[in-house]
Length: 127
Image (tube, helix red, strand yellow):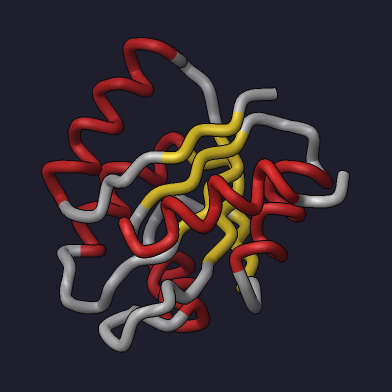
């Protein structure tokens, strides 16, 4: 399975990512790892990205401006997409559950604050 990491952290980034997913992965659904800062237009980002989600794994980026994972999960559950969500304690847990446990395609996006960390975890994680 593929594992994609994208720095899409605002509405324009989400729109560009959605355009790429439509082009390169038509009709594909992903296990998504999502962590967003509270001062971003997360509602617009989620509206754009959730149609590509099979399940969502919510994380809290390590930043004082972060939207807490539990709050993100509540927001997603109120949206009309009816997607199963998981609130993860940390990025490693989200990566394990979304990619290594499912052995299905996964995508991480929403904050530049964890792009480097998730790449390192992906390469270092004990499989």
